[in-house]
Image (cartoon, rainbow, N blue to C red; front, side):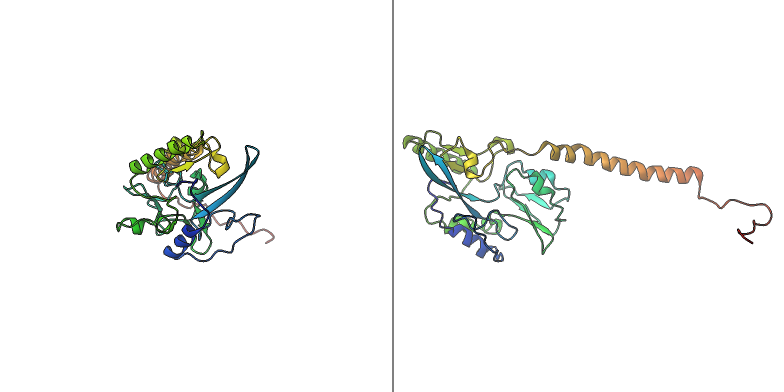
Amino acid sequence: IDTTTCIGCKACEVACQEWNDLEAVPTRQTGNYQTMPELDAEFWNLIRFNERDFDGGVVWLMRKDQCMHCEDPGCLAACPAPGAIVQYENGIVDVNPEACIGCGFCATGCPFNVPKFHAKTGKMAKCTLCVDRVTSGLEPACIKACPTGCLQFGTKDDMVALGHARVEQLKGNGFANAVLYDPPGVGGTGVVTVLGHGDHPEWYGLPADPHVPVGVRFWKSVLRPLGVVAMIGAVLGAIGHFMYQGPKEPRATDGEPPPPPGA
């Protein structure tokens, strides 16, 4: 994604909705041209419009917001349901609705606030990078629709090389702080982004140093296994008690039972 050549036409938004057969989502006016404030379970691709004061004037920064397809995905680290979040060999991170339990834990693990809960299906949803098209040798629908070439698709190495070349070009044109956003805190992202004002990623709605929350890793790697061990221990303890004590028998009584109260 080259934010410096995005014109905010929203062709990528329309292409995403059409190809993925997503329902229309009511828009909300927030004072700018942005379609809606945030991504939605039925709206996976959002052009963000950001106005910032810069160098005595105002700059209008636009960025395509979507799943970043991290190399070390926080959503995958947080998900408790086996097979609900999958990462393919080509790097695409996807939600498997058949295995998803709709718990929302993946959203807590994502530093980009991407996965959204779908109220109708009870599942989580997000950009799939058109994995169905990609596996058939086609580029994602959003990239196919982009009229300016600010969206490109290829291998990670090719996209990084293309991004760095564009950054050098921008620096030569006066954008001294231009960078290629590929944060190491999540192992790098499958979607790399050229930022003209790379010293302020927050101007584009991006975290400066995204990473998987420590609590997510602690829960998944420590607390969850301990919970499983405790559960197994409880079951084994119950079985051992039964085998040692035997089944519970009613107490034997001598003579007639006492009369009921008031008799």
